[in-house]
Image 1 (cartoon, rainbow, N blue to C red):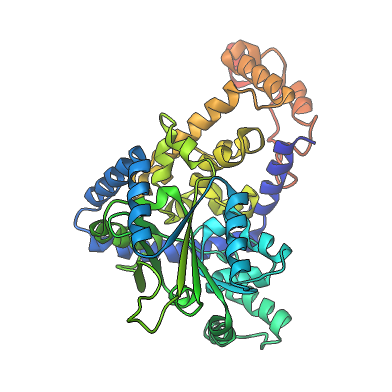
Image 2 (spheres, rainbow, N blue to C red):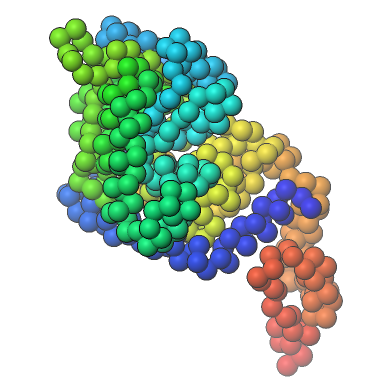
Length: 454
């Protein structure tokens, strides 16, 4: 069985899981309601998007300039800046920091880029204990799962699912409410915050002119992860840089409105280095790992460079009809949904991941909602074009598409055989549509043939 067919059958299976779809659609509907209200704060949302798009496009076009400015100012702030070409180098640098500080326990705020480099798995293999402190991330870590959504890691779980999981893992009451579960996790994590030697975070933005890291969150765990431990490690993609602190008044509210529907996220921090001599709180050391991982290659692409404008709000996932039906895990990659389907083939190779670009109805909804105006559906079509040009499709697929093209090019071609033959042909592979679907029965004669008989 081909890889594409296996993926298609798995997608079909999950799309037919009514409980899964009910949970996913309910959770997304709550986001839709919040985002609808969040947009009301804008008198001209389109203008805000245009400004954000222009800003990010300018940054990607001058990436090296702003990164060097950020590095210079960060170093002046007492921050150690490390450049990593790929995930292996990033993990190696982080492990080196842990070893130098004789650390074993580290607390992590929510960070998709740490998932990208499989930080938890690599640290556990090396004998360290990484603890997720975001509630959603903590839930999926306890479940032994990966984040399901860019913004909401446990979107695929209902409150009953979480209560059952915690009852199994921690012997909490089986009918625990979300408030009770949150209180339990808060107490459990407080000990981790105060005893961890290392705190790890991502970065929503790297602010070049002040050499600082901007973080936005709703739970407060992010700030606790970076303020209690003696060492704060930041992992950030090089595309996260923005020119000025003045840009945050545009980017923070836009990220909140499109991501969660809030006017502004609860906790917004700008971290500009370890604690100073006159400060009693904060980390004694701050290290920023700037990850490339083929981002610089995307930046040189004629059209695809626009994908680096992404601010990881998750809006394209929430509106995508494919994601709403098959969910995050079927993408089998760190970044799911439309943006993940665009960038993953560049990160991990078109040979293995070109199929993601075909998981798209080309409805354009993702492009419409994107706060930085990335033409996502157009980039997915360009991915398909590249896949064909580089011959990443199987021989059987290519032959099948040639046959399809010939049959549907002219009415007389498809009318060569009658309905009986067509019904036999579509049943050659019974699982081609998955076990939950089947082809409709073809009539003995097509409409055009019947028309000629009149």
